[in-house]
Length: 137
Image (cartoon, rainbow, N blue to C red; front, side, top):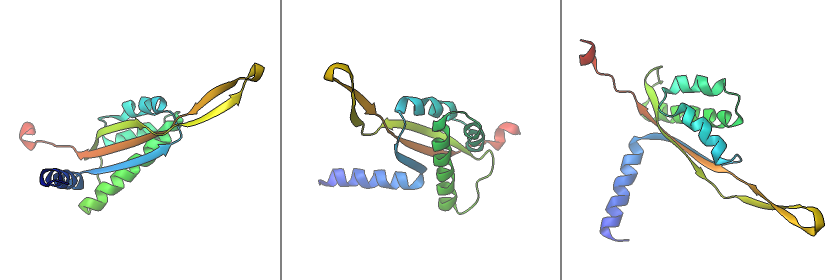
């Protein structure tokens, strides 16, 4: 590895060390279904998003709720204090495709229909909400 590439990698690692995030990999649900729920909470305040996810009827909401609780816990661990309501927001959340399980299903006349069992990876970044006291004054 060259010097420039090593420095870039170390800068990237330092920047990631300051952020609080959580990843959930190989979730056995299609990315399209998961993105519907991710779009619902993107940019929301963290505890408001927890409420939305808890009372959502979608199965994908429970996976994202679990991930959001983990990200909040990671933030608390890094900062050494409890998170308060109105302090954290979901900065970014993205859903990527994971490897697909490919199966065959018997079909009429000796054919086989292809079944693709999709899965996904979810990454969620938290950020603190910046409040300006000068605006209120």
